[in-house]
Figure (cartoon, rainbow over the protein chains, first blue to last red):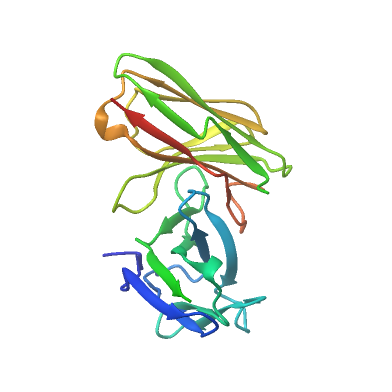
Length: 118
Length: 114
């Protein structure tokens, strides 16, 4: 089963509008963390926002907020007031569990390509 | 400006060449990672170093050889690569590899094998 699922391969949004990028996850570990990264065409993976499984409130960072619905196992990214510079690939990721070496494995989704239209 | 820098940003190499990718982090972290990103595939973890010790080798072919001389530097030595190894190679770091820490990435090295 897919650990991280991003069902929207591509999205369009009008400049200054809000947009929601979907992410669902699958884990049996009670302790986990969810991340969103932005990857422009240049290649750099830029960290945007983090939500821990025990966090009571949804995470927010400037124009980014994470709509965390634990029972539904979803962690959608909301970008408010979209800007042209927001055009990029967006990846959802999850940190969970431990392997034999004690490293907490991080799994990435396949990404959503967001294009902001002027 | 990123706290993780990678060089070179672009590399073209023949299948018989030997080259290296370099990564340096300026964040005071103790864990460093190599990831491979191929077209239309999820990000693949290759290697993890925690306090200079390799804690993960994700079934990577031996033509990729990592080296971590200290917590700030990480290399990926490449030899006799195949065209399918062409990809974006991302270096990353975090405070440690065993705690609830965010992973920060570099700008990536675009590798083309001809």
